[in-house]
Amino acid sequence: KAAAWQRRTTMYIDEGDFAGAQTAFATALRSDPDNPGTALLEITLLAAQHRDDLARARASFWLHRLRRLGFRDEGFMEFLTQAVDDPQEALVDSQADALDPILLDLYDWVSVATARPLPDYRLVPVRPPREPVAAGQLPLLDDALGRVRRRPLEFFGIPAELRPPAAVRRLEAQWRSLFPGGKPESIRLTLADEGRVWQSAQWSDFLLAHPEAADSLDCLDDLATALYEHPESTLPWISHALLRPLVERAWMLVTGALPPEAAYYLPWARQHNRPLLRLLFRRYLCQLEEGQPQGAALTLETLLRLNPQDNHGVRAELMNHYLRCGEDQQALALVRRFPDDLLADLAYGEVLALYRLGEQERARTALGTAVHRLPRIPHYLTRKRIKRPRLSPVGVTPGGDDQAWMYREAMRDVWEAEPGILSWLKRVTA
Image (tube, rainbow, N blue to C red; front, side, top):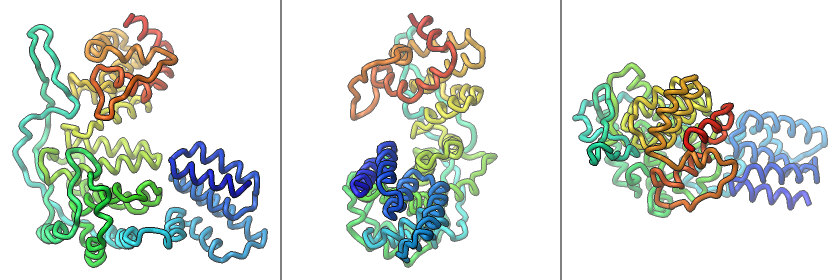
Protein backbone atom coordinates (compact mmCIF):
# COMPACT_ATOMS: atom_id res chain seq x y z
CA LYS A 1 0.00 0.00 0.00
CA ALA A 2 2.81 2.41 0.88
CA ALA A 3 4.57 1.67 -2.42
CA ALA A 4 1.37 2.34 -4.34
CA TRP A 5 0.82 5.70 -2.65
CA GLN A 6 4.49 6.60 -3.19
CA ARG A 7 3.98 5.96 -6.90
CA ARG A 8 0.84 8.11 -6.91
CA THR A 9 2.82 10.88 -5.23
CA THR A 10 5.47 10.87 -7.96
CA MET A 11 2.75 10.92 -10.63
CA TYR A 12 1.21 14.01 -9.03
CA ILE A 13 4.63 15.68 -8.79
CA ASP A 14 5.26 15.01 -12.49
CA GLU A 15 1.90 16.67 -13.28
CA GLY A 16 2.67 19.67 -11.07
CA ASP A 17 -0.30 18.86 -8.79
CA PHE A 18 1.40 19.48 -5.46
CA ALA A 19 -1.84 19.44 -3.45
CA GLY A 20 -2.60 15.95 -4.76
CA ALA A 21 1.00 14.92 -4.18
CA GLN A 22 0.86 16.08 -0.56
CA THR A 23 -2.32 14.09 0.09
CA ALA A 24 -0.87 10.94 -1.51
CA PHE A 25 2.40 11.39 0.38
CA ALA A 26 0.58 11.71 3.72
CA THR A 27 -1.18 8.39 3.03
CA ALA A 28 2.11 6.74 2.07
CA LEU A 29 3.69 8.00 5.29
CA ARG A 30 0.83 6.66 7.43
CA SER A 31 1.04 3.30 5.67
CA ASP A 32 4.77 2.82 6.42
CA PRO A 33 6.22 5.58 8.64
CA ASP A 34 9.78 4.23 8.65
CA ASN A 35 10.17 3.54 4.93
CA PRO A 36 13.36 5.19 3.54
CA GLY A 37 11.59 5.59 0.21
CA THR A 38 9.12 7.87 1.94
CA ALA A 39 12.01 10.01 3.16
CA LEU A 40 13.33 10.39 -0.39
CA LEU A 41 9.83 11.19 -1.61
CA GLU A 42 9.27 13.89 1.00
CA ILE A 43 12.51 15.67 0.12
CA THR A 44 11.67 15.39 -3.59
CA LEU A 45 8.21 16.86 -3.00
CA LEU A 46 9.54 19.76 -0.95
CA ALA A 47 12.37 20.47 -3.41
CA ALA A 48 9.92 20.41 -6.31
CA GLN A 49 8.08 23.28 -4.60
CA HIS A 50 11.40 25.04 -3.86
CA ARG A 51 10.76 24.74 -0.12
CA ASP A 52 14.45 24.11 0.44
CA ASP A 53 14.63 25.20 4.07
CA LEU A 54 11.93 22.72 5.08
CA ALA A 55 13.56 20.04 2.89
CA ARG A 56 16.83 20.55 4.80
CA ALA A 57 15.03 20.24 8.13
CA ARG A 58 13.22 17.07 7.07
CA ALA A 59 16.45 15.57 5.71
CA SER A 60 18.02 16.14 9.14
CA PHE A 61 14.99 14.54 10.80
CA TRP A 62 15.13 11.46 8.56
CA LEU A 63 18.89 11.16 8.95
CA HIS A 64 18.65 10.92 12.75
CA ARG A 65 15.53 8.73 12.65
CA LEU A 66 16.99 6.15 10.29
CA ARG A 67 20.26 6.07 12.23
CA ARG A 68 18.32 5.21 15.41
CA LEU A 69 16.49 2.48 13.51
CA GLY A 70 19.83 0.98 12.43
CA PHE A 71 19.42 1.71 8.72
CA ARG A 72 22.75 0.82 7.00
CA ASP A 73 22.48 1.90 3.37
CA GLU A 74 25.53 4.16 3.14
CA GLY A 75 24.55 5.62 -0.24
CA PHE A 76 21.14 6.72 0.99
CA MET A 77 22.50 8.10 4.27
CA GLU A 78 25.07 10.06 2.26
CA PHE A 79 22.17 11.45 0.19
CA LEU A 80 20.41 12.62 3.37
CA THR A 81 23.63 14.17 4.68
CA GLN A 82 24.03 16.10 1.43
CA ALA A 83 20.35 17.11 1.45
CA VAL A 84 20.80 18.73 4.87
CA ASP A 85 23.21 21.11 3.15
CA ASP A 86 21.63 21.43 -0.33
CA PRO A 87 18.56 19.32 -1.21
CA GLN A 88 18.55 20.38 -4.86
CA GLU A 89 22.14 19.33 -5.43
CA ALA A 90 21.56 16.09 -3.54
CA LEU A 91 18.69 15.21 -5.86
CA VAL A 92 20.81 16.00 -8.94
CA ASP A 93 23.56 13.68 -7.72
CA SER A 94 21.09 10.94 -6.82
CA GLN A 95 19.58 11.02 -10.33
CA ALA A 96 22.85 11.45 -12.25
CA ASP A 97 22.83 7.96 -13.77
CA ALA A 98 19.43 8.54 -15.38
CA LEU A 99 19.95 12.14 -16.55
CA ASP A 100 20.86 13.48 -19.97
CA PRO A 101 24.70 13.67 -19.95
CA ILE A 102 24.55 17.09 -21.67
CA LEU A 103 22.55 18.38 -18.71
CA LEU A 104 25.23 17.08 -16.37
CA ASP A 105 27.93 18.76 -18.46
CA LEU A 106 25.97 22.00 -18.30
CA TYR A 107 25.60 21.60 -14.54
CA ASP A 108 29.38 21.29 -14.18
CA TRP A 109 29.95 24.28 -16.47
CA VAL A 110 27.47 26.52 -14.65
CA SER A 111 29.11 26.04 -11.26
CA VAL A 112 32.47 27.20 -12.63
CA ALA A 113 31.51 29.71 -15.32
CA THR A 114 29.01 31.78 -13.33
CA ALA A 115 31.63 32.38 -10.61
CA ARG A 116 33.80 34.33 -13.05
CA PRO A 117 34.37 38.09 -12.56
CA LEU A 118 31.80 40.17 -14.41
CA PRO A 119 32.85 41.56 -17.80
CA ASP A 120 32.71 45.27 -18.62
CA TYR A 121 29.81 45.95 -20.95
CA ARG A 122 29.45 49.44 -22.39
CA LEU A 123 26.41 51.53 -23.24
CA VAL A 124 26.12 52.86 -26.77
CA PRO A 125 23.44 55.54 -27.37
CA VAL A 126 21.04 54.77 -30.23
CA ARG A 127 18.14 56.48 -31.97
CA PRO A 128 14.86 56.35 -29.99
CA PRO A 129 12.12 53.89 -31.01
CA ARG A 130 9.96 55.16 -33.86
CA GLU A 131 6.61 54.26 -32.26
CA PRO A 132 6.80 54.34 -28.45
CA VAL A 133 3.61 52.39 -27.79
CA ALA A 134 3.44 49.61 -25.21
CA ALA A 135 2.60 46.09 -26.25
CA GLY A 136 -1.06 45.55 -25.43
CA GLN A 137 -1.80 49.29 -25.48
CA LEU A 138 -4.26 49.08 -28.37
CA PRO A 139 -5.69 51.93 -30.46
CA LEU A 140 -8.70 53.65 -28.87
CA LEU A 141 -11.64 55.20 -30.72
CA ASP A 142 -12.09 58.92 -30.12
CA ASP A 143 -15.87 59.24 -29.64
CA ALA A 144 -15.96 62.89 -30.65
CA LEU A 145 -13.95 62.60 -33.85
CA GLY A 146 -14.70 58.98 -34.75
CA ARG A 147 -11.09 58.18 -35.48
CA VAL A 148 -8.32 56.17 -33.94
CA ARG A 149 -6.12 57.98 -31.44
CA ARG A 150 -3.20 57.01 -29.23
CA ARG A 151 -1.69 58.79 -26.31
CA PRO A 152 2.08 58.26 -26.51
CA LEU A 153 4.05 56.95 -23.58
CA GLU A 154 6.52 59.30 -21.96
CA PHE A 155 10.10 58.06 -22.09
CA PHE A 156 12.79 59.54 -19.90
CA GLY A 157 16.49 59.00 -20.50
CA ILE A 158 18.71 58.02 -23.39
CA PRO A 159 17.98 54.95 -25.52
CA ALA A 160 21.01 52.69 -25.71
CA GLU A 161 22.37 49.24 -26.47
CA LEU A 162 24.43 47.21 -24.02
CA ARG A 163 27.49 46.03 -25.95
CA PRO A 164 29.98 43.33 -24.82
CA PRO A 165 33.78 43.66 -24.85
CA ALA A 166 35.66 42.71 -28.04
CA ALA A 167 36.78 39.34 -26.61
CA VAL A 168 33.18 38.41 -25.87
CA ARG A 169 32.09 39.41 -29.37
CA ARG A 170 34.73 37.10 -30.87
CA LEU A 171 33.58 34.23 -28.66
CA GLU A 172 29.94 34.88 -29.67
CA ALA A 173 30.89 34.50 -33.34
CA GLN A 174 32.33 31.03 -32.56
CA TRP A 175 29.25 30.15 -30.51
CA ARG A 176 26.85 31.09 -33.30
CA SER A 177 28.68 28.76 -35.68
CA LEU A 178 28.21 25.80 -33.28
CA PHE A 179 24.91 26.34 -31.47
CA PRO A 180 22.08 24.78 -33.51
CA GLY A 181 19.27 26.88 -32.06
CA GLY A 182 18.05 30.34 -33.01
CA LYS A 183 16.33 33.07 -31.06
CA PRO A 184 12.68 32.91 -29.99
CA GLU A 185 10.26 34.86 -32.14
CA SER A 186 9.19 38.22 -30.70
CA ILE A 187 8.57 37.93 -26.94
CA ARG A 188 8.23 34.13 -26.92
CA LEU A 189 10.49 32.13 -24.62
CA THR A 190 10.65 28.92 -26.64
CA LEU A 191 11.57 27.76 -30.14
CA ALA A 192 9.48 25.71 -32.51
CA ASP A 193 12.21 23.15 -33.17
CA GLU A 194 11.07 20.33 -30.82
CA GLY A 195 14.27 20.27 -28.80
CA ARG A 196 16.67 19.99 -31.74
CA VAL A 197 19.34 21.74 -29.64
CA TRP A 198 19.70 18.70 -27.40
CA GLN A 199 20.42 16.30 -30.28
CA SER A 200 24.03 17.52 -30.56
CA ALA A 201 26.74 17.69 -27.89
CA GLN A 202 29.08 19.91 -29.91
CA TRP A 203 27.97 23.11 -28.24
CA SER A 204 28.27 21.62 -24.75
CA ASP A 205 31.84 20.55 -25.53
CA PHE A 206 32.54 24.15 -26.54
CA LEU A 207 31.14 25.39 -23.22
CA LEU A 208 33.28 23.03 -21.18
CA ALA A 209 36.34 24.38 -22.97
CA HIS A 210 35.21 28.01 -22.66
CA PRO A 211 33.91 29.01 -19.22
CA GLU A 212 34.20 32.63 -20.48
CA ALA A 213 31.01 31.99 -22.48
CA ALA A 214 29.23 33.00 -19.28
CA ASP A 215 30.44 36.55 -20.01
CA SER A 216 28.08 36.68 -23.00
CA LEU A 217 24.46 37.68 -22.53
CA ASP A 218 23.82 36.19 -25.95
CA CYS A 219 25.12 32.78 -24.84
CA LEU A 220 23.27 32.94 -21.53
CA ASP A 221 20.06 33.70 -23.41
CA ASP A 222 20.57 30.74 -25.77
CA LEU A 223 21.22 28.39 -22.85
CA ALA A 224 18.11 29.56 -21.02
CA THR A 225 16.06 29.01 -24.16
CA ALA A 226 17.57 25.54 -24.60
CA LEU A 227 16.65 24.60 -21.03
CA TYR A 228 13.03 25.51 -21.75
CA GLU A 229 13.16 23.08 -24.70
CA HIS A 230 14.61 20.09 -22.85
CA PRO A 231 12.24 17.11 -22.45
CA GLU A 232 12.94 17.12 -18.70
CA SER A 233 12.53 20.88 -18.30
CA THR A 234 9.80 20.41 -15.69
CA LEU A 235 12.24 18.82 -13.23
CA PRO A 236 12.57 21.36 -10.40
CA TRP A 237 16.34 21.12 -10.16
CA ILE A 238 16.73 22.29 -13.78
CA SER A 239 15.21 25.62 -12.88
CA HIS A 240 17.01 25.88 -9.57
CA ALA A 241 20.46 24.55 -10.42
CA LEU A 242 20.79 25.47 -14.10
CA LEU A 243 18.41 28.23 -15.17
CA ARG A 244 18.55 30.33 -12.01
CA PRO A 245 22.36 30.83 -12.06
CA LEU A 246 22.16 31.98 -15.69
CA VAL A 247 19.53 34.63 -15.03
CA GLU A 248 21.25 35.72 -11.82
CA ARG A 249 24.45 36.38 -13.74
CA ALA A 250 22.51 38.51 -16.21
CA TRP A 251 20.96 40.37 -13.26
CA MET A 252 24.36 41.11 -11.70
CA LEU A 253 25.70 42.29 -15.01
CA VAL A 254 22.86 44.69 -15.75
CA THR A 255 22.58 46.10 -12.24
CA GLY A 256 26.29 46.86 -12.36
CA ALA A 257 26.16 48.46 -15.80
CA LEU A 258 22.81 50.20 -15.36
CA PRO A 259 22.09 51.13 -11.73
CA PRO A 260 18.75 52.80 -10.91
CA GLU A 261 20.24 56.29 -11.26
CA ALA A 262 21.53 55.61 -14.80
CA ALA A 263 20.07 57.88 -17.49
CA TYR A 264 19.73 55.11 -20.08
CA TYR A 265 17.07 52.63 -21.14
CA LEU A 266 17.26 49.62 -23.48
CA PRO A 267 14.59 49.59 -26.21
CA TRP A 268 13.31 46.14 -27.12
CA ALA A 269 13.31 47.25 -30.76
CA ARG A 270 17.11 46.96 -30.73
CA GLN A 271 18.02 43.31 -31.34
CA HIS A 272 21.18 43.57 -29.19
CA ASN A 273 19.02 44.33 -26.12
CA ARG A 274 16.67 41.38 -26.42
CA PRO A 275 18.84 38.65 -24.83
CA LEU A 276 19.20 40.66 -21.62
CA LEU A 277 15.55 41.71 -21.44
CA ARG A 278 14.45 38.12 -22.07
CA LEU A 279 16.78 36.89 -19.31
CA LEU A 280 15.32 39.40 -16.86
CA PHE A 281 11.81 38.22 -17.68
CA ARG A 282 12.94 34.64 -17.08
CA ARG A 283 14.42 35.71 -13.75
CA TYR A 284 11.00 37.02 -12.75
CA LEU A 285 9.40 33.67 -13.67
CA CYS A 286 12.01 31.76 -11.63
CA GLN A 287 11.41 33.96 -8.60
CA LEU A 288 7.67 33.56 -8.91
CA GLU A 289 8.02 29.78 -9.12
CA GLU A 290 10.27 29.72 -6.08
CA GLY A 291 7.87 31.79 -3.96
CA GLN A 292 9.79 35.10 -3.90
CA PRO A 293 7.13 37.74 -4.69
CA GLN A 294 9.11 40.73 -3.41
CA GLY A 295 12.19 39.79 -5.42
CA ALA A 296 9.99 39.13 -8.45
CA ALA A 297 8.46 42.61 -8.11
CA LEU A 298 11.92 44.20 -8.01
CA THR A 299 12.82 42.34 -11.20
CA LEU A 300 9.64 43.62 -12.88
CA GLU A 301 10.35 47.19 -11.77
CA THR A 302 13.85 46.93 -13.21
CA LEU A 303 12.53 45.45 -16.45
CA LEU A 304 10.06 48.33 -16.79
CA ARG A 305 12.79 50.85 -16.08
CA LEU A 306 15.04 49.36 -18.74
CA ASN A 307 12.27 48.72 -21.28
CA PRO A 308 9.55 51.32 -20.69
CA GLN A 309 7.62 50.10 -23.74
CA ASP A 310 6.92 46.96 -21.68
CA ASN A 311 6.84 44.53 -24.58
CA HIS A 312 6.37 41.61 -22.18
CA GLY A 313 3.34 43.19 -20.52
CA VAL A 314 4.83 42.92 -17.04
CA ARG A 315 2.94 46.00 -15.85
CA ALA A 316 -0.14 43.82 -15.33
CA GLU A 317 1.66 41.47 -12.93
CA LEU A 318 3.32 44.40 -11.18
CA MET A 319 -0.01 46.18 -10.71
CA ASN A 320 -1.56 43.07 -9.20
CA HIS A 321 1.44 42.64 -6.90
CA TYR A 322 1.10 46.22 -5.64
CA LEU A 323 -2.60 45.74 -4.96
CA ARG A 324 -2.08 42.44 -3.17
CA CYS A 325 0.52 44.12 -0.93
CA GLY A 326 -1.67 47.18 -0.25
CA GLU A 327 0.72 49.51 -2.11
CA ASP A 328 -2.06 51.62 -3.62
CA GLN A 329 -0.01 54.73 -4.29
CA GLN A 330 2.54 52.73 -6.26
CA ALA A 331 -0.33 51.16 -8.19
CA LEU A 332 -1.61 54.62 -9.16
CA ALA A 333 1.88 55.75 -10.16
CA LEU A 334 2.08 52.75 -12.48
CA VAL A 335 -1.27 53.63 -14.05
CA ARG A 336 -0.01 57.14 -14.80
CA ARG A 337 2.87 55.65 -16.80
CA PHE A 338 0.45 53.82 -19.12
CA PRO A 339 -2.50 56.11 -19.92
CA ASP A 340 -5.42 54.74 -21.96
CA ASP A 341 -4.30 51.17 -21.30
CA LEU A 342 -6.60 48.34 -22.35
CA LEU A 343 -5.13 45.85 -19.88
CA ALA A 344 -7.84 45.03 -17.34
CA ASP A 345 -5.28 44.85 -14.55
CA LEU A 346 -4.44 48.54 -14.91
CA ALA A 347 -7.87 49.88 -15.83
CA TYR A 348 -9.67 48.18 -12.94
CA GLY A 349 -6.65 48.18 -10.66
CA GLU A 350 -6.84 51.98 -10.68
CA VAL A 351 -10.45 51.76 -9.50
CA LEU A 352 -9.55 49.41 -6.64
CA ALA A 353 -6.59 51.53 -5.53
CA LEU A 354 -8.62 54.77 -5.49
CA TYR A 355 -11.48 53.12 -3.58
CA ARG A 356 -9.12 51.76 -0.92
CA LEU A 357 -7.57 55.22 -0.53
CA GLY A 358 -11.01 56.69 0.21
CA GLU A 359 -11.18 58.52 -3.14
CA GLN A 360 -14.63 57.26 -4.09
CA GLU A 361 -15.48 60.06 -6.53
CA ARG A 362 -12.23 59.57 -8.40
CA ALA A 363 -12.83 55.82 -8.23
CA ARG A 364 -16.28 56.33 -9.76
CA THR A 365 -14.79 58.40 -12.59
CA ALA A 366 -12.07 55.81 -13.23
CA LEU A 367 -14.70 53.09 -13.19
CA GLY A 368 -16.74 54.91 -15.82
CA THR A 369 -13.69 55.04 -18.08
CA ALA A 370 -12.85 51.39 -17.40
CA VAL A 371 -16.39 50.20 -18.11
CA HIS A 372 -16.45 52.20 -21.35
CA ARG A 373 -13.34 50.35 -22.52
CA LEU A 374 -13.85 46.94 -20.88
CA PRO A 375 -17.56 46.55 -20.07
CA ARG A 376 -17.71 42.83 -19.16
CA ILE A 377 -15.42 42.83 -16.15
CA PRO A 378 -17.87 44.10 -13.46
CA HIS A 379 -20.28 41.31 -14.39
CA TYR A 380 -17.55 38.71 -13.83
CA LEU A 381 -16.24 40.33 -10.64
CA THR A 382 -19.57 40.72 -8.84
CA ARG A 383 -20.96 37.23 -9.45
CA LYS A 384 -20.16 34.62 -6.79
CA ARG A 385 -20.27 31.89 -9.40
CA ILE A 386 -20.07 32.21 -13.14
CA LYS A 387 -19.47 29.83 -16.02
CA ARG A 388 -16.10 30.03 -17.69
CA PRO A 389 -16.41 31.31 -21.26
CA ARG A 390 -14.69 29.73 -24.21
CA LEU A 391 -11.03 30.76 -24.19
CA SER A 392 -9.13 31.32 -27.43
CA PRO A 393 -5.74 29.57 -27.78
CA VAL A 394 -4.38 32.49 -29.83
CA GLY A 395 -4.90 35.38 -27.41
CA VAL A 396 -7.29 37.48 -25.36
CA THR A 397 -9.99 39.77 -26.76
CA PRO A 398 -9.84 43.26 -25.19
CA GLY A 399 -13.30 43.90 -23.76
CA GLY A 400 -14.35 40.27 -24.23
CA ASP A 401 -15.65 37.63 -21.84
CA ASP A 402 -12.33 35.79 -21.97
CA GLN A 403 -10.44 38.83 -20.67
CA ALA A 404 -13.06 39.38 -17.95
CA TRP A 405 -12.81 35.74 -16.84
CA MET A 406 -9.03 35.86 -16.65
CA TYR A 407 -9.07 39.05 -14.59
CA ARG A 408 -11.62 37.48 -12.23
CA GLU A 409 -9.41 34.43 -11.80
CA ALA A 410 -6.37 36.60 -11.05
CA MET A 411 -7.83 39.26 -8.76
CA ARG A 412 -11.35 38.56 -7.49
CA ASP A 413 -10.06 37.45 -4.09
CA VAL A 414 -8.35 40.85 -3.66
CA TRP A 415 -11.53 42.72 -4.58
CA GLU A 416 -13.62 40.49 -2.32
CA ALA A 417 -11.29 41.22 0.63
CA GLU A 418 -12.11 44.97 0.43
CA PRO A 419 -15.30 45.56 2.47
CA GLY A 420 -18.19 46.90 0.42
CA ILE A 421 -16.43 47.31 -2.90
CA LEU A 422 -18.23 44.56 -4.82
CA SER A 423 -21.61 45.89 -3.71
CA TRP A 424 -20.50 49.40 -4.72
CA LEU A 425 -19.27 48.09 -8.08
CA LYS A 426 -22.55 46.32 -8.74
CA ARG A 427 -24.59 49.38 -7.74
CA VAL A 428 -22.59 51.89 -9.79
CA THR A 429 -22.56 49.74 -12.93
CA ALA A 430 -26.21 48.58 -12.69
